[in-house]
Length: 371
Image 1: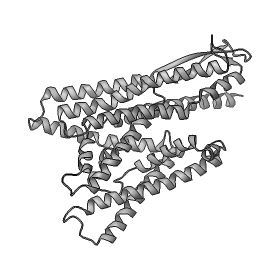
Image 2: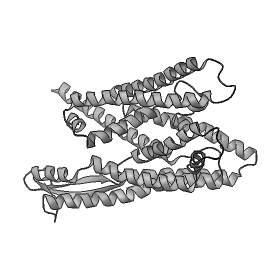
Image 3: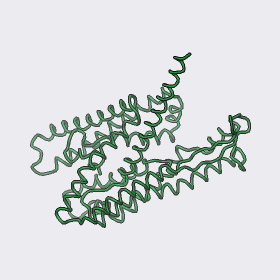
Image 4: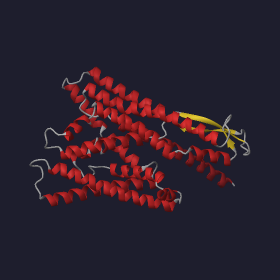
């Protein structure tokens, strides 16, 4: 899983081996904490000044998480026999400095891309890392076919399955529930009604990422501690949390559904939205403004979250089941597929918006020049 998210860097053990995942984990924790802790919640409402402080805390959290992960990786590598030929202290210091420095460089690069380019830089880096592993996966698949480990029909079925999964993700990510809204006071040219769009998947790819991180944590710790022990509860736990195991699938599904509801409840406030509609003179047809509107929106969002959680869980579990049944040696991750498709859709939408803005600016410059 770590090798997939780092685009194969962990396999080569480069300075980007642990990738950008510590920054993502720190960002998710800070985003959740800013909705729970009153002090961070007040900082979030202060605008740019509060955002800079939260960004500073996120960077500090990234350094701490990257340091802990680097210590774990260094311990795992140093535990292998006849692999490290330098003194222990020197190896630990050089490994931790290189890995943490690589993560901080990726964080800085992602922030620069966000400020000076189109789209979210961190998401584009993750997408590029996942896309970098696609050619090697295709190559391994054809190698298996040439070695008679997989038939041509099996390879075609895998390719069609991936295409169908991508199509399903695009359809569900584009799905919207439009709630009609009428305005009693505001005068809108041509019509006095509009709608509020609610996405089917309001939580995005955060639930599977967070669920994967939580599942990987005990398995990784268990593999470090119980690597040289034969029959312990820790080694049994590591084997039970392996990909394709019933406990792993059950726990992964539960965590995805839990974080779908948890994250949606944090980022969406039906009472606040109902108050904003009431202040602007807007109302939902056949629904009274105020508490009834808030109850209606809460019921609507909970229903959408239920189907969105089922959709995300199915997308993440289907490759797991196919991998365990078909016995493919490389991992087809539903989480990586979601990230790849969602970020690509968002990037293409921002490109289209940028082109439209450039076109309007071009027309405005022409009209000004004529005047």
